[in-house]
Image (cartoon, rainbow, N blue to C red; front, side, top):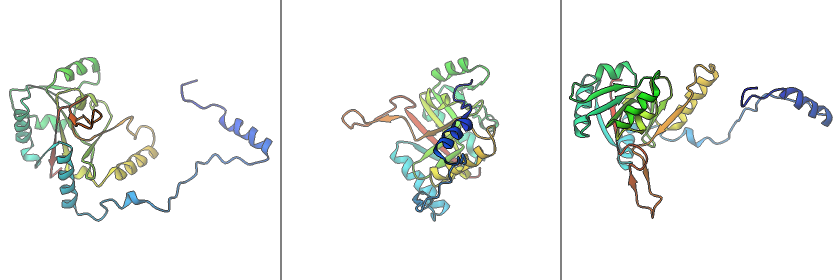
Length: 231
C-alpha cells in the first residue's frame, strides 16, 4: 500500500452506517459561505490602482521595484546586476530569460532539473538568482512561483540576491484569485496542477529578537521586482 492511500474506505463506512441504521453519502459537502469578504478586497480598483498598491507595499517590505517594457528588459536586468554587483548568476530554465539575458561580464548558469545537486551547488555560490513570477499580489507585494522542472525554489532562496521578473498581466488583487486558479487546475486532473506553490514576499526577514527587524536572515538579502508592462 502506498503512503497516504485509503483502502476499503467505503466498506468500512457502510458497515458502521448499517449498524447505526443510517445511509452513507461520501460526496464532499459543497461549502457555501454567506459572507466572502476576500472577494471584495481591491475589487473595484483600477489597473493603475493595483500597480500603485503593489509599488507601495513592495517599498514597505524592503523590495526594489523597477518597471520597463520587454524591449528594454535586457538593459534593465544588466543595470540591476551591476547595481547588485553580481558576477555569478543562476536563472531558471525559461526561454524568455534566455532571450533577455543581458550581455554583461557576469557568468550565467541555468538550473538543470536533470542535475539538481550540481545546480544547487551553483545556487549556493551565485550572487543573484533570476526567476519569472507566475502571479503577483497587489495587496501584499507577494510573487507566486509554481514548481515545475527547471523552476526550483532554490534559485530564489540560496543566492545572495533575487531578481523576479513579473509580467504585468500576472498582477492580481490578492491570493484569492490565485487560489481560484489553482482550484480550477486541480479539477482538470493531477497533471494540470503544480506539485508545489511558493509565495515570496520580498527579502527574508525576522523581528523575533526584541522586535528589531533584520533583513536577509535565511534567504536573499536583497530582492528586486522587475515589472514588465507589455507582458
